[in-house]
Length: 437
Image 1 (cartoon, one colour):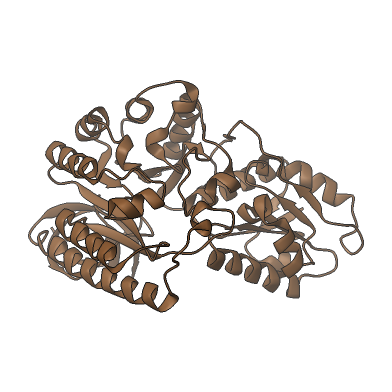
Image 2 (image 1 turned 90 degrees about the horizontal axis):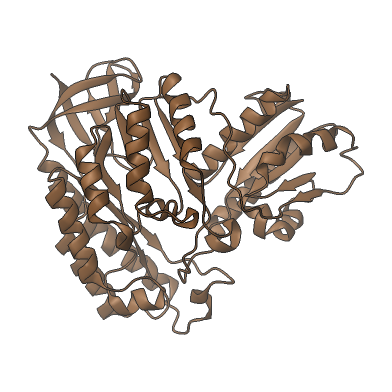
């Protein structure tokens, strides 16, 4: 069959979509880029928060409106794992659903669909959780950057988060499987590998191993010594150890960059979030990283409007942001999710107050980011080119992660996927202007 995949949500979903495509191609199925040419339409959904679920339903509805009688529509990923009834209610034309931990069975699902009449048979649901995290060959990865998922699921019980209910408990890939994937990506010319998981710093704890992430970095660096960049996303602040900081500082391919979501700057809010609430420990971790790597770029995320958040607690968050001065910050307005601890709490913050606090936090971070970016004027850095046209190239330095951080603009067209030495000549809140050296 010919199949079309549309991916929504986070990079972890992108990896799953790539692997589904690899499995299907290995069974003789053909991927197409036009949904009108496909026999099977796959939407890899996101179910993290209500707006993401709305988007997933909207995309499914759009494909359902145009699909022909002999096409199959498949909902995959997070929504089928937990919200299958919601999918079938908003998109009754869906023919099959496959969850977050059973997508490796996608070829078997295709075999079943080939024997069915999409106009009469009831939808098939495959969502039962498994304990093994799949690792299949990485083939036909597009672009110079690739995500490598080292674990899936989460053992934390954060009060705002549905991920444990959707993904299940932490399941780490065996290190030899990760190394194999890294080699495959390197052989395809990938210039940057981004390690991802719900919590990368919890890697291998479920395998009974200590210092799992630090040891994994060494194994990958040894296996692919010519890889220019390796980046770590989604680090739990309290799991960043001196050994990890030292490893990052001493391994050449590892970018001096860390994404470390803190979520709030007041201990009482963090307690209600069921997060570690010792902010002095966070301060010590930041100091540890900046001492080990003075040029490190630190990213974090914060949530405003969590139930019970007072104006005083919010102002403490602003003070904490100003004190730490993270290079990059994502601000999220709290989204109440059924089944989470946060949904049971009283004193919900009114939507207009949440919106006002979101704007204030964003305004502060723009000031901080501008100052941090202006400090880089005069620096010379290697830039990975991601796009070019109309006499301009855009790229990233080690200080910026793909899709979530800023870009460097260069007034010259350069080949995509190549590195060039650039001197920073200007800065705004998010992006930099560079001159080719």
